Amino acid sequence: MQCPWCGQDNDKVIDTRPIDGGKATRRRRSCLACGRRYYTFERPEESARLRVIKKDGSRVPYDRQKIIEGLQKACYKRPVGDEEIRAVVDAVEEDIEAQFDRAVPSTFIGDAVARRLKDVDKIAYVRFASVYRQFQDVGELIDEAKKIESTTGGEETALPSLFGDDAKEPK
Image 1 (cartoon, rainbow, N blue to C red):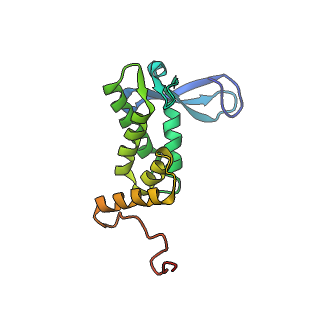
Image 2: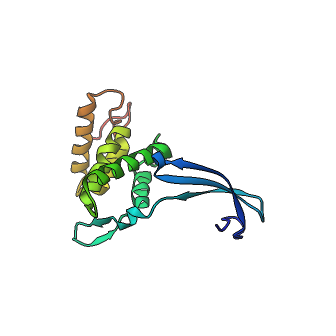
Image 3: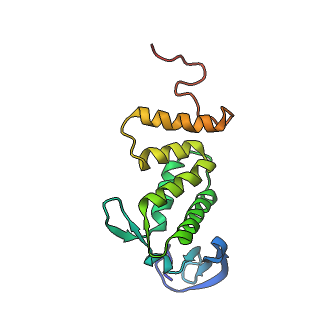
């Protein structure tokens, strides 16, 4: 393995641990040239065989990283940690594995991510839904936000006012 710091491929494995419920392996390595430590992650290539059927009918290889990046954008500046994001992706992958063998529709993935994200963070869910569902105007976004607010019953998890607590709406 090539060191990300100095580029040498002379290292030793210090520690190996299973992650994601044994589906992957994390290795802690130490570069023998510069002495710095870093982690590597190993996953089986089985998911590479899985194809995603896009809305236009084209098929592309499944890419876990795309889901993670989409969730990171939706959760930007929200109290959602990397572990929670990985848990959402793991749950979505379990849903995919339970229902599909070789090809999965992109709509299934998007719906599964949205369903899981709704339980993690309501604001991040609305952000994700606004991109995934391709809202055409602000009204659609507001309708989705109202649905979320009505399901929480106006509790403390309700969406904040667009104008702040003490601001008045423009006339």
